[in-house]
Image (cartoon, rainbow over all chains, first blue to last red; front, side):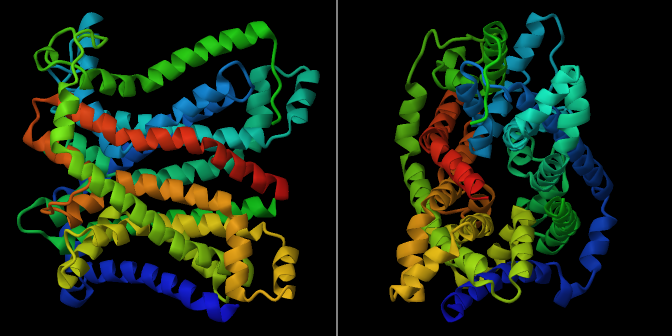
Length: 274
Length: 277
């Protein structure tokens, strides 16, 4: 048995390893040591990009998780049409990112976007969503939240379904209100699922590139540049590609993901133990 | 299903709220469709038409004229990626689940990490390699690149699913004289149908939606996928948003169709796993 499958899995293992190693080589080891990293960290874009990455990630995840949780609770009990509506909620997540991103671009267009015309209708002055440095990051975050809500909803919903109904019934018999049941029973029981949802969200959000690139290209003047888009721009955005620094930025992202990955494993182990 | 229905009054109220929420959530999707049917002259109208009152299929005509080859390429790449991913992942998942090779847990961990590697980094690695191999701007190159998004996920899904296959079943096959390959092919694979469907579905969607590999590894190619088609469309021609949105609608069709068709397979896969536990 081993003789048959081992080479295949070995092969796969190698191929996976290979990519990582290759990109690390790109990172500059044979050519310039850590020079690329030094160059990148002292770049004036570094701190803003770091800040944007953190803001984008934290804001996206917090809001996605909040909405996802609320919706999961909302959809927990069966009601008429609930299955269909829940399936429809999946649509934003399944759409190709470039489709969502271009739709949001047009909706947020300063002159002709539907968002600004609704705001006008309400008597509020429109905003240059994508073309003003003050709003671009918020706009791409908004689009990303929209895409991420379904994912949170699905995982949290399946977590909720796994909680035995008797527990909630017992709590209700003891006179707990809906909120108390959620706060003191459901939420703690959901902790492992929540942790995994948040971590997966984190890992996913750190990588987000398509949405930002299509909507703003990280601009204007880097106001929505994150590590992912910066790395891309360094590597592919210019006529003279700077693969070294680009890969260095990318590897910094991997490092963060690796730490998060270890965290994920720990959470899962604790969950298995429990 | 452990679902109980609450009092009728509550459910009616919930259905109403649910409808409103879903409508809000899907508004961008609706807007995409609405704009795709809007006439050129109405695109910049304030306030915009909320419904395609002067509907036109001009945008879709433009899609048919200009984007058809892109759609074909995307379809080809999507199917190719699915095939490659299944060929790689099914045996790997089997070996991880049932043969428990040395270092299996390390490999599982690596697979997890592999999913976290940002696409940008992979794209740079591929770009450098493909440049040397001369396979930039080829469908094959994109298929290999796209499959790296899916293979780690696929192996993990297969491993989880195949761990649930009773060992007795495999032993019975061996007793009947089936070799390892035979057991895998005629017992394990058919039983794992739901895992295969899940994997194939996600792989296709990812390959179809891929933008980062397409935009880096297929920059000047004549055979670009649809995501790149949309992207170039936005760049070259940012006046005709009706045509851009029409392309987006067409690009969204496979996702929508697969969701509708395959939802029950995913649900079946999940419940099958739950029952076995």
